[in-house]
Each structure stands twice: as C-alpha cells, then as structure tokens.
Length: 307
Image (cartoon, rainbow, N blue to C red; front, side):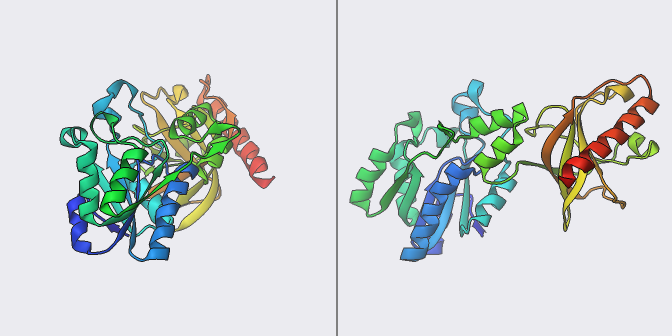
C-alpha cells in the first residue's frame, strides 16, 4: 500500500483515484462499508483506491473538550487495518490550524486536482472550515467537476448506530464481545515489552510488561487473553491491568503471563486480545497470598480457554 501525507503528492500518480474520506477511528464495520465502496469503484472502473483521513483527530483543534482520548486505534494500526481491506493508497493528512481553516470548496478542489473520480463518505459526513461541507455540496461539485459521490448509510447494530464513541464505551465497560462485533474483529492492545521489576518471575509467573499510557484499556483487573508475539499468534494467557497495589506499584501497567512459554521477549511487539474478565484488582496481605491467587487465576483462565 502506498502512503502519502499531502494531496498534492497524488498528482504524480497520474491515476484515477477512488477515495473514501473520514477519520475512521478503529476502522469499524461502518467505516469498512464506506471504504469498500471506494475499493469496489477502483476495481470496476480502473485506477487506485485510497483512504484519506486526518491526524490528529480534528476535535483536538476545533473542540478540544470533546476530543476522543484515547483512540480505538493509533495511526500505525489504522494504516494496517486499511491495508487489510485491499486499499491501494493511504493518505493521513496533518490536521493543523491551516487545515482547520480550509473552506470546504477548497478542499474539494484539492481532491479534484489530485485525480479524484469517486468519493465515498458516510451520508452524514461534514468537512471544511466550520463543517460547512456535506454530501449535497460534494454532489453538486461532482456534477460540475466530473467525479461521482457515494453516500453510504450508517450501519446499525441492536438498533443503534455503530460508532467509534460507542465502541470506546463498550471497551471501557469491559463489553469486549460487543466491541468486537462492532469492530468486525477482536479489540487488541499493542505495545513493546518493557523491563519491569521482575517480581512476577520471582513467584513463578513471569510476565511481559507493556506501559498502556495513552491506550484505550478495558477495566482494571485480571483477564483471560490471547496474545500475538512476533510470528507466534494466539498464545493463551492471563493479563493484569492496574497499579499492582500488593507490590506498591506507582503507575498503571499491563502485565501478561503466557502459558507454557519461555524466552526473552524484551523489546518485542506484543498484541493482546482480552477475552473474559476474571476478577478485579485486589490488594493482598502478602506475596504468598498473591502467588496463590495467581495460580487460581491461571487455572480459571485455562478452563475458560478450553471451553
């Protein structure tokens, strides 16, 4: 998949472009419906399919109080998700003050100059300075400039619109199955394994530690998980999210204990899928009590994974 950071870089491609436009946080099933229309247009008409998105979220400039933090997927993960949908071109535009002041008409002009022949958007998408651009404006300009507009209706689930906001709340509530249905895949947390205090190793349950700062996390406590480590996929284990009060932890951390696994994993990328919440985080009176509880957690997780 090709990547560009400015619309004017697309001119050099000299190809008809079929573009899906939006922020696409998490690339959930509603976003996938929009992106698939651009991919289908490229396959049927010839040219390149592309996703034009923005970074950071426009609300960070236009409405900071309501800016989503954290996001469902960071920019790197978003690019991977977009590529998996068969998209040829990924264009993350820097949403700065100049972009925020760009009139909707000027933004459309840049798309036309880049070679846009199809523009797919959610049917309620707004864009441009003051959010004055909408589907009707795109269609009117398309009739004059020679590009087609595909407004894609919202996708619903259980009678409600699928949205990144709804998915974020499901994850915060620990409703991981619901989040997965809306995402079209399990929600995962990714990060590089960092050195810890190695206390877990001393009691027989070595862990891979990830600092979740800035990452959307499910509720604190112990979880049954599946993890991907390098080329190893779906390794079973348990994870603890929290402050680790029994050992006087000072900051929130994600610790993952992989069953029947040994090896040096420091510095390697780890991706964690949360399956089922086992218990909340607890302060124990001694390390011995903590060790005994972890043993019970491991047995509980093994039973859940075997079902």
